[in-house]
Image (tube, rainbow, N blue to C red; front, side):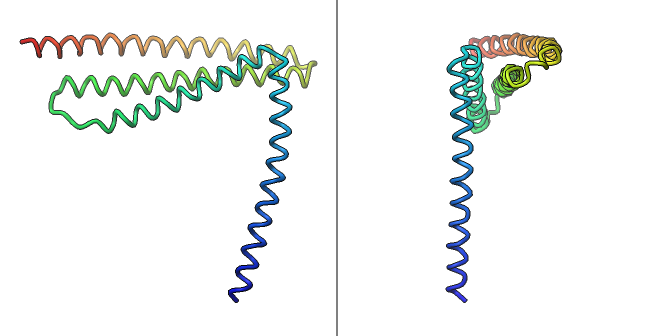
Length: 166
């Protein structure tokens, strides 16, 4: 019975390795085609670099939020308030970056779609225009929320400093 299990595991591992190799070959081909398109089209390259940069920022913000959550508790209400605002600010930033990344991904998809289906230019442009309008509204909402939070934080920070100087 043990021998059968080992052979089954070996066959299963071999099968998985074969499937993984096949998938990697397919993905590699797609990636190579995509990269060559991005190299020849500076706009697609710019969009891709923006997507990568935003992804890094999103991940860093998540790590920073986890670090903030690990800070020792304090009994000082103003410090608690400042920490809460810092965490909220990072969350807002992260959500804004996610919105911006989605926007760049949508733009890239539209550009690639127009290459594959040139007869769909009008529809793709209409979709882009609607998306762009909504994006600008959403981005402005984030800006307003961040500005309000910044103003609240400045007041809380000033109160903390005044209390320390008394």
